[in-house]
Image 1 (cartoon, rainbow, N blue to C red):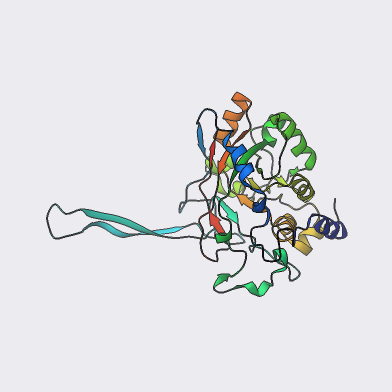
Image 2: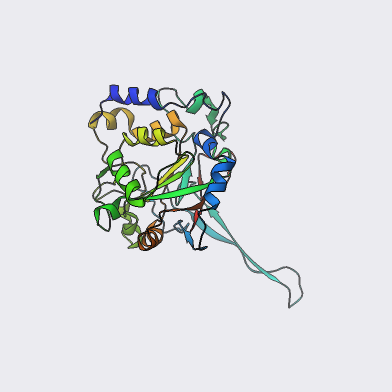
Length: 316
């Protein structure tokens, strides 16, 4: 397994700082050009649409008593059958208020979500983040995330419903899934990695989905090089943690905590998503053998947000 010196060597190899200028806050989303979007639109053949979002709910995947202690949304009624005028036939209004953690359901992390060794993407100072949020690299910079999506179904590749917690997804796995999909990953693509672990949440087992009972499957740090070599614009998984848990080595766990987060967000500026529901899409892809689609997945542009909820739509 990679050691900390190897981590730093990989970080230097994949670093994108300055690639799109000294003031860039979008990172790999710069790879989504007009030509990329036009090619993505050509993926729409039948008009079939698939929602990849889980419900934003008080019963969502977050376990507030388990580190990192993120809560599910809290809601209350603001207006309930409230008359607009005093007329007996007046319109009556219903509305509610949600208080939510921006990464409590299907979401993208902002490039300011993590930092290490005084490092934020593109060399912005860590003081860019304060009690008022992210003055640089906020989720509001991740606009127009519209591109070709590619499903890499690792669970389907192995012929299982879901991978077991702790299963490391390797670059070799991604190569095989790409080959099975019959596609070549191109610059500006968004990669959706299916482990099947979402099935635990859909079956109501939030603790297993959260990684409490058996850990989480997910990409290992070597995948950062794979993403960089192919110039992908965004990567999302169907798990709560994006990368594998437990981590690949105790040294990395102790020293870095979230090593793949650091490589993707800080070094590459790579858009990273979690809690994507890929189950219905995976069934359709397996049935027709088409694993590419038009993907609209722009997060809500919360000003200075450290993450953003999203309701992605895949169209085939």
